[in-house]
Length: 374
Image 1 (spheres, rainbow, N blue to C red):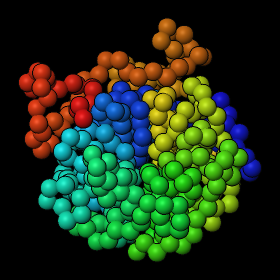
Image 2 (cartoon, helix red, strand yellow):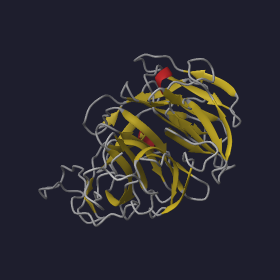
Image 3 (cartoon, rainbow, N blue to C red):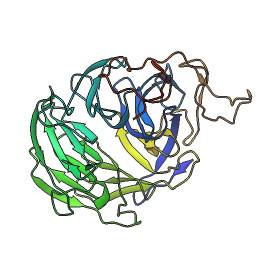
């Protein structure tokens, strides 16, 4: 399916991968082409890793590599060290967790106990590739009569040491209303998807407000509760316009360059898209939350040679083996499905800090693919 983009570019659907942990909110891509989905549900969440086909071509098949169960994951970002940084909200362990590409937990920081600036309700996360500075958004957290320190943007050193925090509740410059998405440009500017204010705000690395754009509405140049944001090396800004069920590309100063997508379940359609990420080739990865999948798009001019734009690929049951036939064995009508026969997936239940036991829960019971109860 081709996804017509307005006003100036055309984007096409390449492939997709289904999530088992459900409702992906964040997505990240590493240098090898592996894709990481951060999932977030009221009942739990986690991180899933998908590996591309052996030839490395996007669209020739995806297979699940592992699934972790750290809790609800709202943001993913890469540190210069190669660690995958995730904002995690789980029982008693809200903060930032850092993982190796194989899924092993490296460290965690920003928790309420032991942190000078605890992250009570962390959402988006981004890392400055040059300095290693980590930026984390957090929303309000209601705990009975108290509202904990939310709608703020915090900056940490690469080692997790707190440096600065700015922002406040509101709709003025530098204020936020449930900010969810964040990205850092190559020049160091910090772009925030100020979700409930339906706008993008841009800050200097030190938190100085620079500019904003976006108004509430359904027009191509307007926004309605955008959650995902990414910036390419040229400074173009990609937005997952969540409530409009659209994907959009803007110039650094907010001029619309392209818009595509519509609400639906077919390949290329989106239903409440949340996270968005880019790879080195300029392909766009979208956390299509309600469709429980990650979709991959590219400019029509950049689509991989040999793959018809909009073709849906098949993931074989054996990990890493592409298959261009459907489940009945017929060729020419490819569909995408999640490999049903998966090996045991590692989880991080033993690596997490102790948590209170659930009354009535079976001792030691951990769901292999489900997420930790929150």
